[in-house]
Length: 148
Image 1: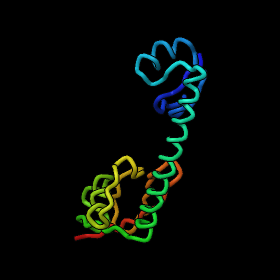
Image 2 (image 1 turned 120 degrees about the vertical axis):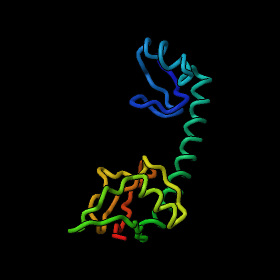
Image 3 (image 1 turned 90 degrees about the horizontal axis):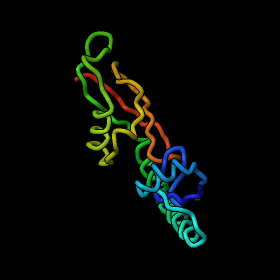
Image 4 (image 1 turned 45 degrees about the vertical axis):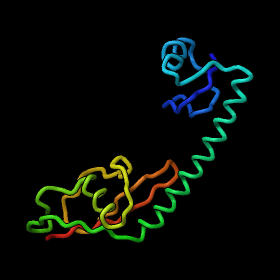
């Protein structure tokens, strides 16, 4: 069945895309939730408008993400933590602490899911942490962890 997506659906497509899906998937999942509508000639013209608006919004989001990246990349974010012998931390510094430090020191509000910290920081020193604000905009932020 040919449907037009009204929202982004993982593994299927993005808002405004015309896709072919299994009849049961469309009838039982996409259509009842309002995530898609049956494709017709008039609806496909509407889908083109959805794609254009999506592209404009995506370009604006990307530009905003690149502007934030330009401000954050040259800045070193400092975090104070209790440090024991040999530079090991008592506890660790996680994503929440990194997001709070960025907001306090630069005024830029990030979401925790945008900071791609694989595991908590457990040692003092300089760490590069990847931040992904947009599908095409990923950059490192320097975090300096020092003892108090």
